[in-house]
Length: 313
Image (cartoon, rainbow, N blue to C red):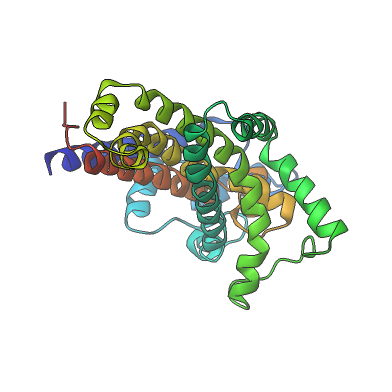
């Protein structure tokens, strides 16, 4: 319990620091939301009146505490561009982006663990060498390019789906999931390739340690040694990678949404950055940061479950 409490306190501190960095970054970069909203031909008096009404003339630290306390209470502020609450703008977009990220993670895990174990068991075999070559190729191809290839092959040639023909989860959940399979695959493939290589190397390294030879000397079969002893220790660095990969998939899905025409948070985020709509941008970035921090907390807890020897230092 002491271990978990310390991690939660660190998570809260990290969240505060991230929120401060996010807020200050968008207050010091060039650009004025008032000028962007009213246009360059607006009079200085009108611009100042708008800034005063939005609280933009207050000291930065005052603006930060007002924004952060409201955010903690669930109030994400009001969009400068859309003149409505930020929550109402992004609430229907978040499930799309999160579903895409979760599907990508499931595909990554489903591919990497069995293939990683297989290649480790058949080290230097023909299939192992072929998979390692394919791994290098897949890792070198960025997700957005994989997305373009998948769109061309399965959308334009085989007509398995209509590019840009997104189906809302509110209308057809099955069609919604089906449309996200290829985008999720584009995100998952490079991460799966990395995870396969990491798991393979970790299993091979653990299999050469003394405790493995001791397990064999006690009459355990190869499968028993692998699944009861080796894999448990080999999975620790892999779990670290998977945690980072899941967090990266949430952020990386923004690019893939643009490739496949998925109306997630990407379009709103890019439009808001262009329009200096800081409340929307800050809310989305803070949401991503919270996901990353929570995932890291879960990874630490899983560490403790897998290896009880891990203690608070």
